[in-house]
Structures are given as structure tokens and as C-alpha cells.
Image (tube, rainbow, N blue to C red; front, side, top):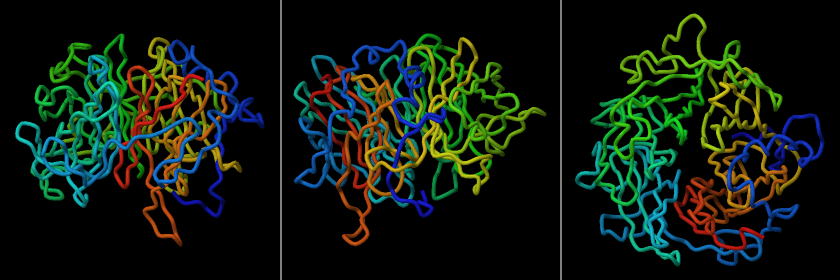
Length: 461
């Protein structure tokens, strides 16, 4: 993302007219964690866990008292013997494996030009020409890797996804390429379900009723079973925010194959979410419109005819998660020069299904403090210490930032693997931040070079 002549120092702001970060977020960020267990364990100091300490090994800077373990790196041999650890580590989630074990499912956002593709495995491969997919790691109670294997292969551009209430991972293809494009033998742009304990139970079956478009992430309403989906389309016409109404809600592994209805969100009078700039702005008449052709047989979904009232678009819809009784989703940025109604450096929106109300909760923006984030929020997750963890996908140094319930923002981790040159350094973005079921370990990926870290330390005080 261009710097437009400004420095790489950053700040996270809620546009309420207040000057200080803690004042600006008062009454806003608290909404993000209402009703969650994380909201009850806020023990952070004003400056998070303290300043980052340079890593002598040049991999990952962390606050004093924290330490990391490298679980896996691209190019290493998979412990299963199926081939090499693939490139482009992206979305990820952690699952309880019983007896202290943890299952990690990790996306690989591989395009046709990927350096190391996900190895094809019988029974787990959708399209042999696809280089993307997922790998699964199982860790023992001490955090050591017991196994690492292919969980699904032959998919394409597996960016993010999300966990289900029944303990599976939904991996999303961020592409609309059809068979015959880029050498593919099958259509792409689907969601696939992955069982972290036994991938062969779910196989490589596209959940076609959930739509074919540039998927980014999902979140499941644990009460109603509705699946919310974001579309990462950064070129106009921009993406939509969707919900999928399953025929068998909360039916467990494989139930999403039974089909359902795909709908897109319409906010009356708001054709582009970027036009809304003030936090707290709320809309009580959100409508959901059936998608005419979820498979996008001839026309991409976002270009289809949704009637005279149209549909609501947003540039770069990315992270998505469920918190309390609401779903939250991220618009990573909006550029008017690229067709958005207005500019912003990132937004977090909240949708309350019971009230049918959409609210703009957080707006990101550049400022002057090197220790604070400012542009292109991507993957986000709830932290056990009470707050958010945000992977920033911008220019310059790459961080994982924490945001407390009271609005303080702090650097949690900084990548040190230089993928540029000494004269013009570059750092790979972070992705897939998630926590172990017991909240004692943060897992996070460096996209390039693909590296999976496990971070432990004094998370609660």
C-alpha cells in the first residue's frame, strides 16, 4: 500500500473527535468484547506488555518475558513424508485435541506462481493443478510438534477462513478462476471444510451453495448456525458481505454440504460502506437479498442484478469473527482513486442479527507514533487478556498489535526476517493470529518466508 509521502509511523484512531487514543476508544472498543470471557480478564498495563526486545536470532521481537518457538518453516520436510512445507502461510486456527494436545490448521495462499505448492495427496486433492490448500499440525501438551501433514490440496489462493462450532476449519479460496484459466481443471472460488483431527473425514469437497467468489473469511453464529462471509475484492465493483443460511444449521461435520441460501447485505441508502466515516454510525434497517446465481456461472456475484435498490459494496473486506452476540468484519482500506466513495485506512464493523443493526465501531488512520498501528488491518482475533490482536498488512515494519478493551494500542510482535536487501529492507506480513484453547499460547504466521510461531509468556499479568 503506498505511503503517499508520509512516514511509516502509525496510530490507531476512533474518529470521535477526541485527541487521545484511550479517550477516543472509550465506549467503542468495549462493544467488541461484551459477553466474552476475554472481557473479564483485562490485566494489561497502560503500555501493554512493555517495549519489544530485539531478537538476537533475527526472527521475532517480543516484550520481555515472552518467548517463541518456530513450529514450522517453508521448505522444511513435512513430518508425514508427503513433501515440503508449502509457501505463503496465511489464515490459521487452533483446536482442542484432547489431553493437552492442540491441532493447528494453516492456509497456504498459493497462486500458480507459488514457490512451493501443497503436495497432492490421494483423497485430499480437489484439482491437481491447484497449488494451494492447508496443512495441519498436532502439538503435544508441551507445545512440541507431533505431526505435520497435508489437510487439503489442489485448491487455490487459500487466504483466510474461520472455525466452526463443531471444531472444523472452513478454508476460503480468494479467486474466481474457472476451469481452463491458469491451467486449472476445475472451477475455483469456493469454501472447503477441513477436519483438523482427520482431514480424510472431510476430503476435498467444495461447499458450492456457499457461493463462488473471492472469499476471504467467515464467522459462524453459534446460536443460529448462520455463516457470515467476506469478499476481498479490491478492484471496483468491490466485494459484498454475505450470510449463508444452511439447510442443516449446526449439524456438525459435513452438514454444510446439505446446501442452503446465500444472501448479500443491503444497507438502504448506502451503496458503499467507505462513505461512512464516523464511529458509532448505525443502521437499523439492514436487508438481506438472495444472490441470483451463487455459482457465478456467467457473471461474478458482485456484478449480478440485485434489483432496483442495488446492493452494498465495500473495498477489501477481510477479517471476520464472532464475539458475544454479534459478527464483526474488517474493511482493510478504501481508496477513492480506485473507485471507493471515500478514503480510509481500515474499519471494523459490527452486525447485530437480533436487531438487524450495522454499526461502524473502529476506524484506523495514520499518525505519528511508531509503536501504534495505522493502516490495512487484516487478520484479527480475540485475545485471552481482554482485547484484540491485529495483523497489520501495510508498508514498512510488520507488527502484530494488541488493542485493549479501553483503547490502548501496543506492539505485541515485530517481524525481523528481511526479505529485501540491507539497503532496502522489507518484511513479510503477519497472518493467521490465533490462540490455543487454554489461552496460554499465541500462534501466528509470517507470510514470507512462511514461518509458524508459537508465543508463550505472561499473558494474564
